[in-house]
Image 1: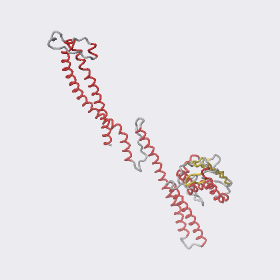
Image 2: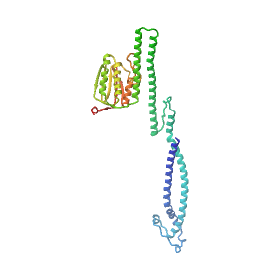
Image 3: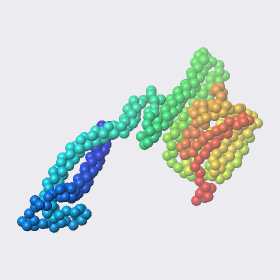
Image 4: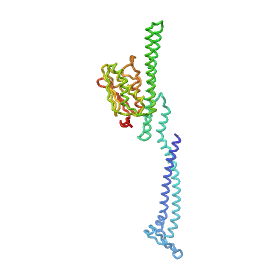
Length: 396
């Protein structure tokens, strides 16, 4: 910080001193050119002509300068005036140099002091930003610079830094919630397994009870496996894409809906698909999970006799369903890990609450965006926007 202030002070002070030297040089040149002529013009008329022996001293030729053409001076007067003006001019210029040198020294000292003060004022916001950045840690991410300064580059830098801290705080808070929720979700099936084993196998259980315990443990293990797979998929999608290829999103939608047709029939739900040819540059596996999670979520949060409408085209992918009413205030929270529209009941087939968070993560990895809105009659409409290619690009 001090080195930067020293550099700025040297720069500002050097520029001010150079300006002062240039100004004094110009003044000296202008004064030296006119001082002799001005003194001769002022002195010559006052010199008596009788004291000059014109016969012994030849009269010098009058100069052809402008002042000689306008002033009325006798030749005898000019010789004496020239001697007087030379001595007076040399004395005046010597005095001018002395005064100018002293003034320049004082001016240089003041310039350096002013430059040091100006450099400190300019770099003060940088010092505030540096000090605040050094104090930041996980426990005080809520603090902000909040620089009070007129609009400018440093004010913009401080505001940008505050915006970055906002994003970091949100990210850290989301990670902390994710870790806490993941620990809770993983602890629940382990507790169920332990309780089932302790209660069911405490004495000599009958075969039917052993079979029930076995089915319960297998079901809990399946839920844990799905949860771990979801966490791994979420972590992979958060890292971004490692490879890209052309993926026919409309074909992916058709494949996914056909794979979920049996579940839709079991739940007595009608799935309507309207797919237009569209190609996306991305990861085929992640895009398949994105579509699958959206359609599966629309099936599971529905009611018998309901519908699921899937539309895909250049504008993106949209999945809408019927079902229970959703509070509009909770819709943005549904894309966070382990968030649900309703409290978890630990019913068979109930997800871990990672489906929509995986959708949001995959969409971000592909440079897209995701959003949702609550339907007036119940249910949810989720929309994913992805960078797409023209249909003709698929045939190339």
